[in-house]
Image (tube, rainbow, N blue to C red):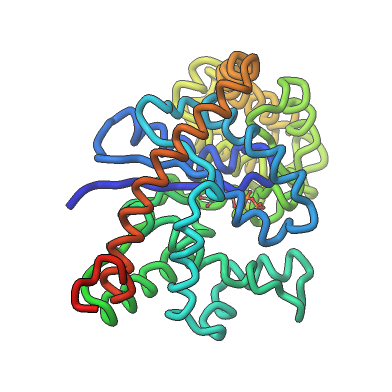
Length: 351
Ligand code: ATP
Ligand code: MG
């Protein structure tokens, strides 16, 4: 079977370090390993509109920001196809047919949708489009025959729902679509990186992010204000590592080589944690260490971004070219779907 990879991000803001560890860095590795037939990276503007329909400007503006973040982390349009969701009309068409394969109750049970409905204060007035976004996400994936979807943990219920839709479709209309699989980061902390406020998930919509494009000063200030352990008042006090965001981020970003470079008195993170728990290790020191690591990772990304920012026209052009290519693929899948369903009337010589 062909190995086709698809992932997407909503243009609701610039991308953050949660995206980086949860999905982006995995995509770059896959891209550079070259072990795939096709790789698509989509800017999900139509999906972003499902909960930002009153703020189209925000979604519009962030299309280019997300594309710049992609290029800055090393996604390469010469190797993969980057495109804009709303440019592919076939995805909307597929969504319409897939809606028949999902019940309202099933959508309302989706735990990620449930969390997001609560977070957005929709209560009993959930927009239909928002509730149905897992269906449109299914179209995004199967519309390119994608089988591998590198995502953070919050997307697992979406992938499960997509697989159910594919199975229902294939049962009804014959084997036509492929069941996609999630590809999760290996590091557990990266499955769902918490926000700098300690909330369960760093998320553009929660305003608790370190953005890939934040300046070094802004990152340093965010790290300085980071929540650690409220019981660790004096340096000599024993501290807690669990729930301490600085250590959570160290779990996500720190590698043994960082100790040799910035904190040679410790061999690894376990030793640093043990010292913090014993007492005698201050927050300033661990924050400085985290900041140095983040700076090492973010500096080159920031620099690349600055280069690409110089010609935003070229970036847009690249997205339109990618969208043209993507549309051809989605159109051929749409054709197959219509044939399987028996509604490809113009090609149906039994009609
Ligand atoms: P929004 O608040 O608008 O939903 P978001 O920050 O959740 O934005 P998305 O565009 O919805 O970002 O997610 C894009 C991808 O990044 C998904 O694969 C998602 O699983 C992953 N991702 C997002 N936030 C995190 C996080 N904090 N940790 C790990 N992965 C994440
Ligand atoms: Mg999200």
